[in-house]
Amino acid sequence: MTIDYSGVARTKDPARTSERLLRMRRRLRDLHDKRTEGSLMLATWNIRDFDGNRFGWGPRLDETFYYLAEVCACFDLIAVQEVNDDLAPLERLVAILGEGEWDWLVTDLTEGRAGNGERMAFLYRRSRVSFRHIAGEIVLPDGQLIVGAKQIEAAEAAAEAAAASGGAAPPVEPERRQQFARSPFLVAFQAGWFRFSLCTVHIYYGDESGPQLEHRVNEIAGLVDFFADRQDDEARALRDRAEAAGAPGHDTRLDVENYILLGDFNVVSPEHRTMDALLRRGFIVPEQIGGDAITDRDHFYDQIAVRTKDDRFRVLEGGIVDLFADVFGDDDLEAWGDDVTVRDDDSDEPDEVRKRYEKWRTWQMSDHSPLWIRIDTDFADEYLESVGAGG
Image 1 (cartoon, rainbow, N blue to C red):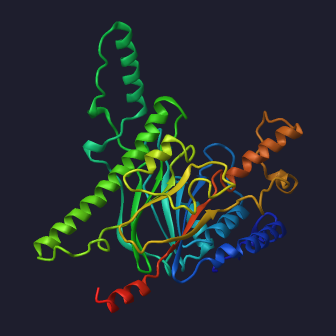
Image 2: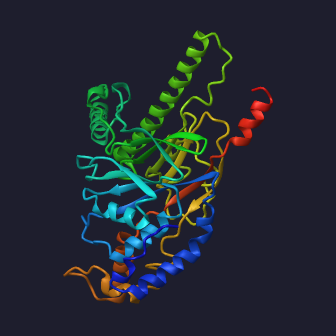
Image 3: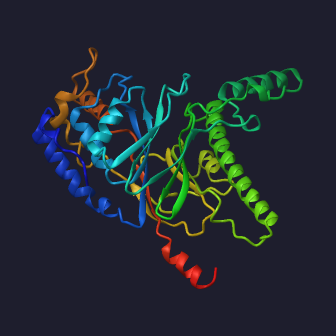
């Protein structure tokens, strides 16, 4: 592990910081040990408002960056959502992780009110993951544009008015459809033998009912359709080329790109329509993190879904990280009380002080827990067996 702890002595309370980091290191050691030569530890983490202080609950303490790095160091490749305009906090996190070992890619700002001026990023270990020099934000073609909340509201209002007057409701106009509120970010990587394209998202949230929920469902479905169509088109094109070359029996499964979607999908629950929109067209959530496989989740917003053509693909295990087991815990109000942001009109009543602390700490760590899977990336045995069998 290459975390640079040299700045711990310059934090506000070095004794507190070092003691908490030692706790984290002991508890996370098992997770670190899962990082083996023949596998990839892949994670997604919405690091709340990193680190814009747009809501007045920050900025993050110096020591918090070391706690964030301690979590990130458990993985080889991390998709990060809610990165803000100023990239200095992200650069600081990478510097603590070890600039010689880690690299990163980040999007431009997402404009518009729904986009919140956010960026999305990938952090990855150079020794475990190779960037295949393909990166871009997803732009939907005209035929796949998303029906947004405002259009749904207008169509519903028109339908109600038409029903009241006995007339017919006007159709939803295709030209008023739109792109994603926050553009998904696609990057091509390779880890060991496994080649894949990774797309991170922060899906529109809005309300949990009505037109804004429809907008959310439409974004998830639109993303899934886009990648399912792309992968199917790639498979067809490869088969056509094989037939044209006189090799109609050529197995194209290993040549078709594998797609992994991950990030904050704002999925309500495994039984909800938002999950139905994700689990369609051949996308699956690995059983190690699906349904009730993880019993201590507070919500299901964050997801990892895969659609692979390589039948050697295997998820070995998965889980989430408890962010407050060692730092900013339920019983740590006294330890950090003086650091908690207090506004002029905030109450000194004990219950209100505790509520304020519990809210503040989510702007130190996050209100989302990192979700991870471990993927097998060593296909050497399968390859050698196929060669030996004349495959």
